[in-house]
Image 1 (cartoon, rainbow, N blue to C red):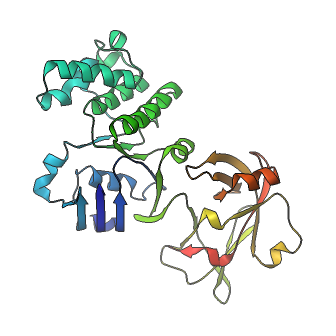
Image 2: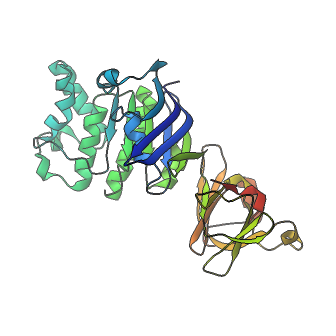
Image 3: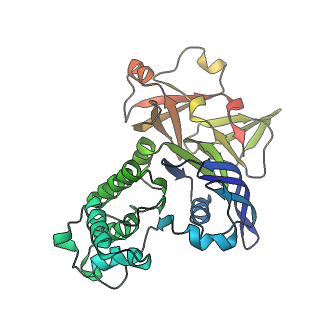
Length: 340
């Protein structure tokens, strides 16, 4: 096990930004972090990068307890790329070589690593090595920033929305370089990305965060209130299109529930009598269908202002002939919703 986190808490201005009971990260895998803004993704990345220590709890790395005095040495194995990383005011090759020189590598190794890293992100040494930092487009600059980190051949590569503000070509090349680092060097990749289709197709494991906590390992549906009590232990949320969602149980202070994608059934039409055994029968449009690593299809359905994800067997989808843009019904039992 590469990382092991136990009872981690991180506070900002007395607000708990991260609260993780137990989480493990294995060597040589790609992990995706998903969740809304403020869910704790960047806070978790900074802790995994040994840039911040948690206010409570313990972290083990390679089986050893992480202590503050060990963090500078551990950072040599871990590197992080932010969404808007700035380059040094120097040539491309010097940007990529900077970390290698700080580690006192010999000139031949540096030259080889710079060439290798630039080619990994689709930038030829001949055309880009001697360019100044200001002669690059936004996408090219982000690729150079990634190359500078790949040149280190890190044990762990942490990425916080690295493709959010780049062109399509750069986005594709960055994603390809990330996969290559995993395959060639067994680098562990932990990535926050807006490109959920790529993430769910590529990641070995997707970790869903909400409110600073791990909601699940895999895609998850979080439904916020307000909720109106309509019966003994039964609550209702009205959607803007007039449909209603019913959940059971005892409300929590978060005013939110989560529903596992595996608990949501898709129907191409209303089956007689089906609604009698399930309160929720919600009409919506299929907006996306993506294969997950486990061979299931991740189907996104838009229901007014809400989007639900269902994990469905491909044979079932084929049988019902469901496709993007099609109107379907998403159904789940009130008891399938869990209060956060």
